[in-house]
Length: 81
Image (cartoon, rainbow, N blue to C red):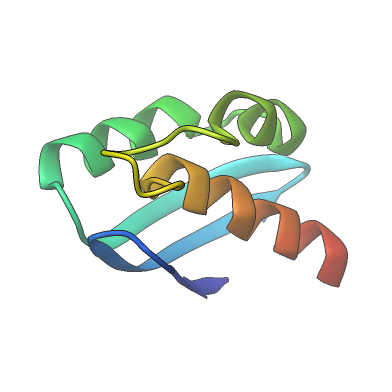
């Protein structure tokens, strides 16, 4: 899935879900080290657990963050499946 982010430095998030597990997460743009870290940490994680851990994380008072946007993208994925 490709998700266009809103309100953060990254522009898009690409990811797949296989057997209920998050995999192949890639952020376009954003803080490279942080987005790589988030991508590696959620690799193989249950989709609901990833949403639970990432939803609501704020970056610099923006009201969202790259991890929060990933949670939003995963929620959208679940609604579409």
